[in-house]
Structure formats: structure tokens, C-alpha cells
Amino acid sequence: MADTSTVAVSPMAEPEAETGREEQEHEASLLGMWTFLATEVLFFGGLIVAFLVYRAAYTPVFREASTHLNVLLGTVNTAVLLTSSLTMALAVDAAARRQRQRLVWLLLATAGLGLVFLGIKAVEYSLEFREHLFPGPGFVWEGDQGNVAQLFFVLYFVMTGLHALHLILGIGAVGVMSWLAHRGWYDESPTPVEVLGLYWHFIDIVWIFLFPLLYLLRH
Amino acid sequence: MNATHDTTRIYWRIFAALMLLLVVTVAVAYVDLGPLSAAVAMTIAVVKALLVILYFMHVRYSSRLTWLFAGTGFVWLAILALLTLSDYLSRAWVGA
Image 1 (cartoon, rainbow over the protein chains, first blue to last red):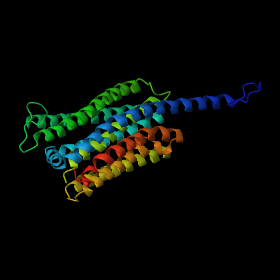
Image 2 (image 1 turned 90 degrees about the horizontal axis):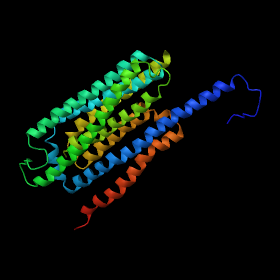
Image 3 (image 1 turned 180 degrees about the vertical axis):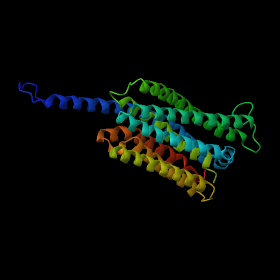
Image 4 (image 1 turned 45 degrees about the vertical axis):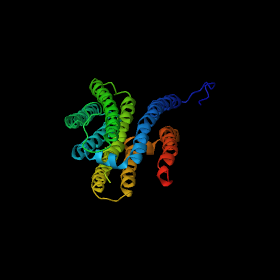
């Protein structure tokens, strides 16, 4: 944009051009993550549409199957993940303000809450395994249309499993980032923290939809 | 540090709203509203997702280009869902 042919450059021109470039790099980084997240929206969205199609076709059995999930644990887990989004948003705020120590602690809190979610999810899975609700040869269903009930649990385990996988990767990234933050890695530019924040909030959004779909549609 | 106070206060408010909506959606699940139940549950989920996208993900304060990138995935998903569900959900309306 700047006219480089002019010899006399005002002292203000140089820093301004620098700021412009930094802003552009910042936005480009965020747009890169948004582009990836668009593919993720369609990835999880396709599964959710499949779930809705089968639920419409076999509503009574899907309702019945839904009551076998633990709503209390699911609700607590939703609260845990929503809280982790708060700590992540505050972490991005700390990074933007170059508050290194606050950033480290908030990132650790975010990763910790992610681990709590996974722990509760593991408890839920073990309860479902014990009730023989995992699809396959060991599946037991008291009632008719057991194969349709099995379909519900296929979708449940695939969707929550993929969500957990995304969360595991997120926890790993946030954990590494907390250590790098401690080493002063983001004192210069907080952009990476913000980019990872977008990914973390997206995992939260996926769960915001999975929770009511799987646990709450009982009428 | 007034600015810090302002942004973090917004985050806490959004968090409070999200928690309130979580309580509401769980409570509503135990009330039989017939076919409305699913619509109410999904509406609350969309509102919660919008709060996260607009405030935690800063889209509300971002450029038009960011809006475009953030919206693209959801627009295509809406097309996918609309066309697919308009078929499957309407099949019961006609005698097979």
C-alpha cells in the first residue's frame, strides 16, 4: 500500500507498516484455523444428521435407548467443558495482555478440566460396558428391536469417541502450550494461543449439540 | 486495567448464561412437550453455540472476512441437513 518510491519517509511510516503486517499475519492465522474448523463442522455435522435421520425413523427405540445413558454425569460433564471454555477464553485474554503467569495457570486449568471430562466419560463408558450396551456380539437388550437399539449405541460411541479423540489432542496441545508459555514463548505474539482457543471452543460446541441429542431427547 | 476488567466480565457473563441454559435444557427434558421437546432442546443448543462463537471465539468483534470463513461450514451443513431431513422427516406424512 505504501508508496516506496518516495525517498523522504516519515518516521511514522515504518512502524505503521510493521503493525499492518502483523495484523494481517494474525488474521491469516485465525482464518487458517477457521478453514480447518469448517471441515470439522461438516465432519461432526454429517454424523449428527445421520443420527437425526435414524431417530426420526425409529423414534420410540431411540427414546428408550437414550434413557440408558447417565444424565447426571452427562450434565456435570457439559458444565465441566463449558467451564474449560471460560478458562480458555480468559487464557487468550491473558496472552493478549502479555500476563505470562496468568496465562500459564489458565492453560493448566483448561487442560485439567479437559482431563476431568475424559475421566467422567471413562466412568460412563465403563457403566455402559457393564450393562452390555456396547454394540457387538455382547450387546444385550431387554425389549424388541434390539438391533435398532444397537444402532443408537453405535452412533453414541462413534460420536462421543470422536469427540473424546479431539479433546485428547486438544488437551495435549494446551498442555504443551502451557509449558511453552512458561518459557516465555508467547511474550512476542499471543496469536498461537488464540488459534488453539478456537479449536478448544469448537470441541465445546460439538458437545453442546451431542449432549441434548444423545441424553435429553426422551419425549 | 479497566479494559481487562471489561473483557473478562463479558466472559463471566457469557459463562453464567451458558450454565443457566444448561440447567434449563436439562429441566425441560423431563417435561413432556410432545414434538416440541426436540425443537426446544435444539433451539437452546443453537443459542449456546452462538454465544460461544460470538463471544468466546470473538467473531462478534472480527472482520467480515472472518464472518465469511466462520459461517461457511455452517451454511454448507445447513444445506446438507435441510435437503436430507426434508426427505426423511416428510416420509411419514404420506402413506407408504
